[in-house]
Length: 150
Ligand SMILES: [Fe+2]
Ligand SMILES: [Fe+2]
Image 1 (cartoon, rainbow, N blue to C red):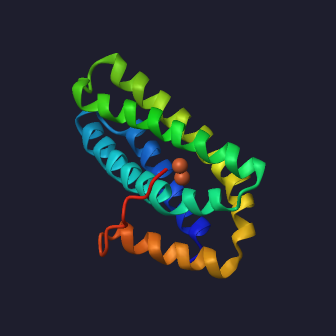
Image 2: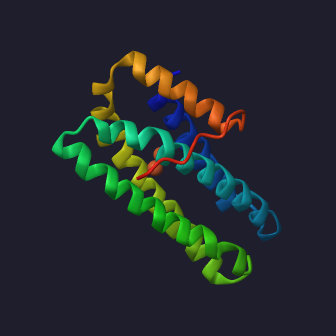
Image 3: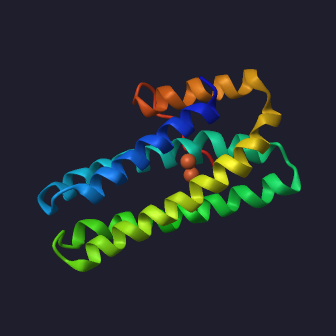
């Protein structure tokens, strides 16, 4: 599977989980949110370690602009994720944080899919498929990808 297809599939999974979290009873919310957090962290790790460096290598002005922005957006997502365990599910702030997180991710995913993934096509189908395989095995925990310099 091409890297961009794998990442899109993971975007859809997280979106579906946000839908579930909104409908879930407060007692269930924590569990769904934990699942969202786990999936998001794994997703951001493979993007940061494998996909973003490859896109940056393309070296166009647009690629060099969009990749650092994406790292910053991940940073903001991580800040919100880190706070969730400290907020009570019954607290109105929990729902507010969940909504903000969902919106942040929606915006970020739009930029990735509409802009970054288009740029990534320049890598060619073979390279994208190889990157997809590398990311799939890193997600499954078969072989942790080496941490690369940003
Ligand atoms: Fe991302
Ligand atoms: Fe993504």
